[in-house]
Image (cartoon, rainbow, N blue to C red; front, side, top):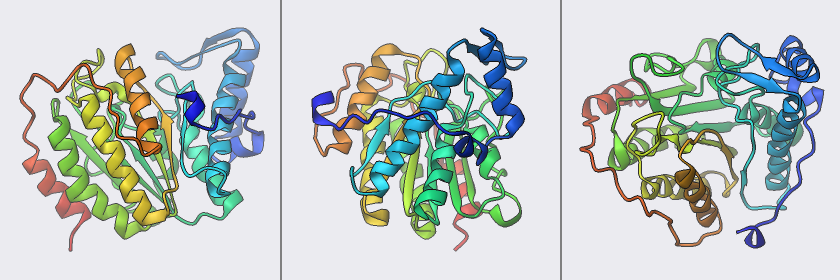
Amino acid sequence: MMDKVMAVPPAPATLEQLRRVHSASLIEQIRYVSGAGGGLLDYGDTYATAASYELARLAVGGCCTAVDCIMTGQADNGMALVRPPGHHAEAHRVSGFCLFNNIAVAARHAQVVHGVKRVLIFDFDVHHGNGTQDIFYDDDTVLFVSMHLFAPYFYPGAGALNEAGSSRGRGFTLNVPLPPGVGDWGYNRILDEVVFPKVMAFQPELVLISVGFDAHWQDPLANAGLSLTGYAQITRSLIRLVEEACNGRILFILEGGYHHQVLIAGVHNVLYALLGRDEIQDTLGPTPYAEADITRLLDKLKRQHLPN
């Protein structure tokens, strides 16, 4: 695929870019632990190696560079294939393998450098983007939408239906807490009936997507029920929406994904869609399990977020 796209080398994020989102103490903690050779950064599973600080700065910087390319017309759209991921990193703490919040810094970069007034961040990793929500929870310039599995003891335990923003950000957080096994049909119903009307009312000028491929029915960490074809349908629907809402300005940023074949095919499918090609890779097929009924969830979402 690389001969079909413009590969953009990332520059490390500056401290100024990181400080728009993260506290100075968090940045220093990651720098110090990484500089000392690595170690745990929290009481869970988030760690640094000797290279992590510089790699995390490259991941953030790559996302900001991609935003620059899109906002200046050098590219129509893009995908940031970066590691470490970012959507669990909060303003003041690391979380869930995430050091810096790539998508949050990219959103602030778009606002500060390019004057973007309204940014949509849409997250359909199987885990809730708790870090992104934390950063923008009281902000009415960023609409944060997260579709995620919400089950007892499932990480990170955030993203309930009633988490909808605070202060001037009230109503600018839309959480879709899914039961296990929703599958392709359920995901697309929620998009069509709730998410897209909410987005069109917001009128974003730039759309940033946290895409995780761990909602696939064969992913070893979850059981959300999506197929690769379902992922491709969501991707293409988002691209069509953005063409109408903000001249196609969309950037996909890689988050989770723990099944190697799904991750490879999923990334290819996003690139196909961004290039306007019809191909879809899906050798694994649809989920063999019955999809969960989401009728009651849809009713609750509509009452809360689409009152008119």
